[in-house]
Amino acid sequence: MILVTGGAGYIGSHAAVELLENGYEIVILDSLANSSYESILRIKELTGRNFEFYEVDLLETEKVENLFRMHNIKAVMHFAGLKSVGESVSFPLDYYGNNIAGTLNLCKIMSRFNVRELVFSSSATVYRTIGNQALEESSSLGANNPYGRTKLVIEEMLHDLYRSDPFWKIVILRYFNPIGAHESGKIGEDPAGIPNNLMPYITQVAIGRRPVLQVFGEDYDTPDGTCIRDYIHISDLVKGHLKALEYLTGPPGIETFNLGTGKGYSVLDLVKEFSRASGIEIPYQVTDRREGDVPICYASAEKARNRLLWEAEKDLFEMCQDAWRWQAMNPYGYGVIKT
Image (cartoon, rainbow, N blue to C red; front, side, top):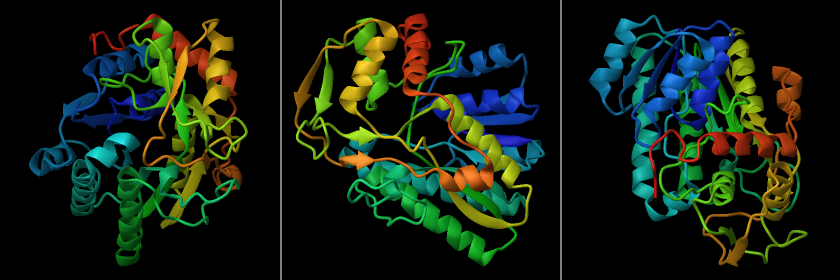
């Protein structure tokens, strides 16, 4: 039995589908603070599989412990947490309280119930990005925003945990920029309020929910002046999680892997490719830089290719195509009209 924390969210829901389609038994925990119960129903619809869902926050110790008592959990995929760079700059204490304290509580409970296999959802924001070289797992660390710092603190905490108890098996996955949606169009990214990530903002402009795309800065040291990121299809990303789970069947240890394509695309590159995939021109206006953003960030995925036997397969056009299919089929996400 695999516990999926944050399994109603964007990445967690896609991971849940991948797990179920590959024969795993799962249980999902999610506070629904920034996700929808509708995604749980759609996971069941897509897979034809049933599973238990608990609307629980990781800080609710007694409820989380009860979940471990009721289910024979062997490993945890930990996605739960707040995830907006911009929001973390405005509300850092919320991020430290939710992300770090929630993970701390989870690990304590896992130890109590002798569950020592963990796949942790980290982020490329833990890197100190300098220059325009592909980031390797050994690259210098030093997050530029509170969200990234919460991920970095958790990574360090997990290393300390392993050093204190070398029976743990931990894989840390540093995501770059997941976009796209399930090919069915049934599940996808459904942010609450104004999107903080680029792709859902683009798709909401395309569907008519937003008048214009805000581009944060055009004076970066990049070919077109806008930020460059490594965009990865959500389906490729979650396949990496299954490879990480397989990796945990090996000896105890802690390992970190980048999950990215190894290619960087600018904001305007993504806008143009989305227009090509959807047939819709996206109006945009340039505004001031956003605090916490770095000019260039893309992965070296060699370690994951060599050790996990994983690599991203889908290109930027497919990412845009699937993101648009999701939004076109679900103009208001999971059915709640949001402002």
